[in-house]
Image (cartoon, rainbow, N blue to C red; front, side):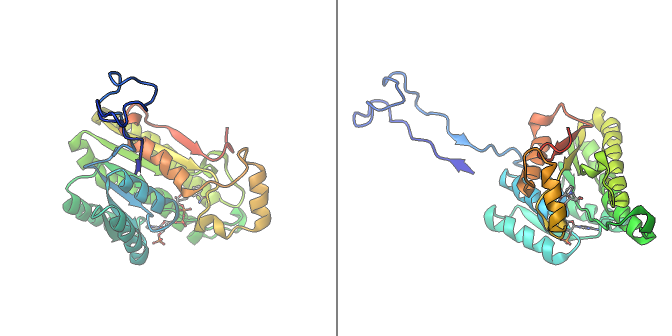
Length: 285
Ligand code: NAP
């Protein structure tokens, strides 16, 4: 991304030396600083799970736009390929697609080995893959409990365990888990989901404590209501009710979460670990 600024006149150029920023020709620097969006992740490798759609898709694009090479992980090959192709069309050759079920520990282990073979390092891990199977606790099936907890919580653990060794060897790394405000405040009808996200916050803090001495940070981002396939199917009345509880008065966008993730992944966040950053329009405060 590049924001053009007016080019300063070459010193001594008569045609333009009278313009310019209120400076006389001696004061005009040879070059004014240009406002480039910094390539904060040049030479870095990021794994983003659940990057086929929604928030993960936005995170993968955001990190790639700032120079990261991205391992795009999704449950379906179709969606993983689509995101990787989109990145490669815009930021030549930065992404590769991988299909896997994050809940399957053996597959994640193999996949992480493949990613390390393909990219030779991993600097950023974003555990974003997640799903919902809502229902009142009284009626929740074991299957619905298991799939949500296994995907949202065990899936993140699987990836952390698969990449922590190489990160420890590098003595650097950023782990960012996408939790939810439901894991902080609870939500009726989401016993499985809220428990998985509260667990993910606990896991985030454990990993922060275990890996801090190796230069690795671990943080969580807790989105509020974000416009994606996950919230698309909610009844209109419920959506209207939710908006009424959001001080900023609307749902967020995937790019809002991607911006928070990019910050936590960047060098500017080097002194932040074990934290939960809520990005929710002020819902939880
Ligand atoms: P989404 O649009 O439904 O996308 C979910 C992504 O996760 C998809 O790419 C999907 O893969 C992938 N995925 C699901 N199960 C997987 C598995 N077992 N293995 C690998 N990938 C899997 O959801 P979203 O709204 O972007 O949510 C992303 C994350 O943000 C989730 O962790 C969610 O809990 C959290 N979150 C979302 C909201 C919100 O309002 N949207 C609020 C709070 C937290 P395929 O595309 O291949 O199917």
